Length: 244
Image 1: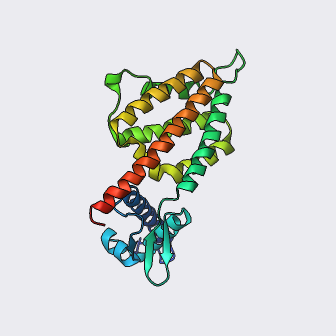
Image 2: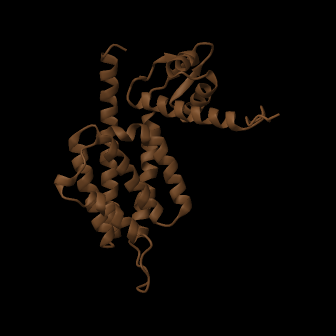
């Protein structure tokens, strides 16, 4: 008699699958908020989300608790959940922290290394240059791609600075602002400006001009911060005008 090859009831596979589904639900709901399929003020129930996404309530609840901890939704007593208005004061603080971390990283990247050594971040700078220091005709116009490249550009600068704790905090900040940061690339002019600004930052770091690189980074982040806030308010208005 052959024994069954199926895992016993106590196996961890189902739990892992539930965690994976919870991650998928979390990412989908976060996209819904970022794209204003769910507008600040919207109310919904766990059952509605379960039916729409074709999953059980368990991963939905896990995803919503995670979004609640991040300040995107709140639970309502006996009446489901509500999408919270964007907390611009919190985003301002996160952008300020991002600015401190990235300008400090720029200074560290410009510090002189012993002449007998190749700077450990040289390869990283070459990789970034292959994306951002290209002729205009080779620039990407794909908003999703440029948004991803922009995030990778800033994370790479901080990671290359060599301070693991600084990089960890920066990754956390990056995750928390991602939902609105991508809105900075909804206009072609902002994509073009990002290419120009990143190119200047890279050239300053390569030339070991720490003060200039930090100044350029600060101006770049401040501009992005202002554009994101303006675009977000505009997108919320359009979403509500569309019948919400």
